Image (tube, rainbow, N blue to C red; front, side, top):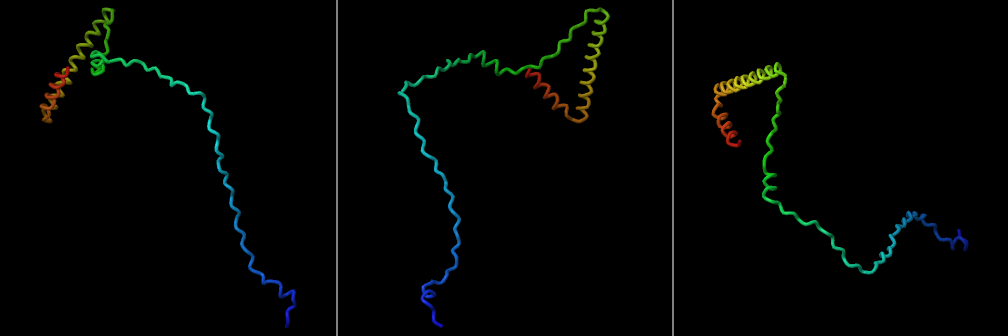
Length: 127
């Protein structure tokens, strides 16, 4: 079988080429014009507040430890209420003594009385 001239001229069909995805165009930032500088001005000096030196009295105030404020109980003016007030005060003192004695007795039984006495001495020295 002989091929015709037309058939001879037709090249063999190649496999269709795969299309590559198109590259996305990345926009580059355009260079902005530099802001125009006005005529050179003299640098403005910032005013600083004068530094106050701390006196010794101020330094002492800050180092002192604040003592706890005790509530001041004002005695009532009515004579009957005043007597009741005095009785309550004496009872409070007695209770404090009893509590203190009980604490000392308990400390002796536990064998820690020496530590307590040392702590009490230290507190007395601080005052």
